Image 1 (cartoon, rainbow, N blue to C red):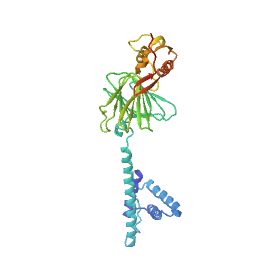
Image 2 (cartoon, helix red, strand yellow; image 1 turned 30 degrees about the vertical axis):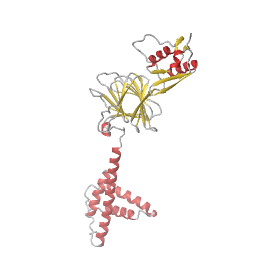
Image 3 (tube, helix red, strand yellow; image 1 turned 90 degrees about the vertical axis):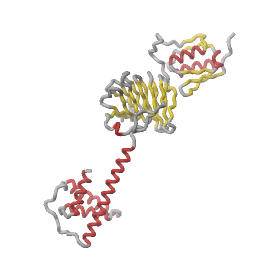
Image 4 (cartoon, rainbow, N blue to C red; image 1 turned 135 degrees about the vertical axis):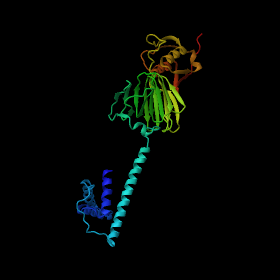
Length: 354
C-alpha cells in the first residue's frame, strides 16, 4: 500500500508538470514499456522501466522536488499524449485497487472454521502443529491438549469466568480439567462439544466432509453449531458417554452416533470394587453379556436363540471389548455387528439343557 500511495502522488505531480527530470524519465520509460507490453522483445525494457520507477518512488518522491522541469508545457498533440497516458495509468491503478479490495473481501468471507466468523478467532492466541508427530500443549486452566499433525487450536490467554471456549481445525485429543462452574466448549467445523471434565477426541475427515467426537472418559454433549452470526448451538444434541462417538456429516446435517474403534473398560466405577474378572465356567451367556455391558458402558442385544447357551471361557487375556466378543462368538458359532451405538449378536443358538 505504501508503494501504491507513492505512485499516486507521483502520478498527480506528473500531471501538474511538477516532477524532476529523473522522475519524468522514469515515468516516460515505464509508459513506453507498457504501451508495447505485448511484444516479447520489450520484456527487458519493461522490467528496467519498472525498476527505475519504483526506485524513484522509494527514494523520497513523496517530498516536493526542488527543481521542476517545465519545458514540457502540454498543448496540442502533447496534451493528447499526456491525457492518454494519464487515463491508462488511472485505469490501471483503479483496477489494481479494486482487485486488491475484492481479493481481501473474498478471502475474509471464507470461514477458517465453518460456522464461526473469522472476527471471533482473529484476536485469539494460536497454536499449531506443523510437525509429523503429535504435539502436546497445556491451557491456562490446566486442560491438556494433544494436536495431531496439521491441527490448529485457537484459544484465549485467559478464560471467561462463566465458560471456557476454544476453536479448532484438524484432529485433537482433549483432557479437560474439571470445573463444574465453567463448562468447556470446543467449536469445530459445524459442531459444538460441551464438557465439564473428561477426555475425548475431535477428528475431521475432509474426504467425507464429516467431523467426529469420540469419548474416552466422562460425558460430553455434542450439538450442531448455529450460523456464524450466532455461536449458540442448535437445539438438536447428542449426549455421549465413554466408548461412544458421534459423527456430523455436513451434507446431511445429521449427528450419527456409534461406538469408538476400540472400546476400553470403564475405570473407577463407584459400584464396583477390585478388578473385573472375565474368567467364566459354565455361566449362562446372558449373564456374561450383562457383565460386559456394565464393564464397557455399551448396550449389547442378543438373539433369543442365544439365551440358552452356557459358556466356559477365559476373556481375561484380552483388554478390549471386541476381542472378548470374538472369543465368545467362536465358542457358540455366533456373530456380532454394530448398529449405531449398539452391538447386536446373533447365531443359531443352543439347545436348552435338560
